[in-house]
Image (cartoon, rainbow, N blue to C red):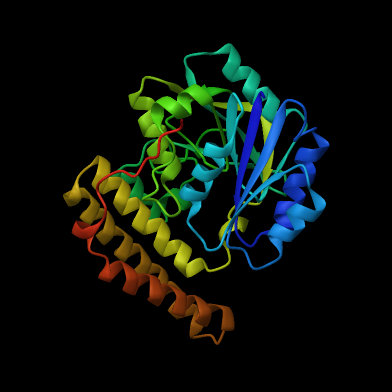
Length: 321
């Protein structure tokens, strides 16, 4: 079988249905392709929907949320394709996109992974690649500088927001919303590091791919629609904290505990700034602002209590047999 598509999903029943419909319209699953959905303990009817409406899709059910990395690894280990793609449940593929990615990989043996252009529902192109994580990038993000100066080659360097995303190019990191690699690369590099419950698993994997001497290529001639962040909106406070914890794990692993502690302190400063801004809005009586104040208080507490020295430093990377 040529292509395997792995979708990790939790409580995204409507988005997941749209994603599977788009794949079905492209003949996936089919004679040359399979789809594996790994449900992470959803309570919104997602497993029943997949089983009833998409009987050709292979469904793996977890009783609880095992995290994004572990769920994707379950799907990857169950797959049989020569080319294996991770796909978010909040995406819709355009006809031919995934097979185009697979054909590109087949023609370029020095490429370890490839990713498509991601397009928002309003038609705008999403930044879907990045440079490797750095202390400077973390600082710019927490201080909003990457958002205030999108077109700056300095402040917009990490997510390449100064660039138009209209040409194929080698990149450091491909986003995990849609990432495809050959089976032999997954086997050589290893699967996703399961220390990352959510976020940074793609950056970590791409860094390992880079250290294996393999290219990562952004290919805009393949396009995928993406409801950015929709698959992780159920509890935003927990997701923000998980994002920052994963970053600390990444920096502790690849740059050491001293740098990871600096990243934690930068995140505390950024969260305190956001709390202050939402408090100012809450003073006007806005209910949404009051909810945001509570959320950022929780994030700030979690970051202050985070002990970087106690983070797991030993990689948890399953092998692909």
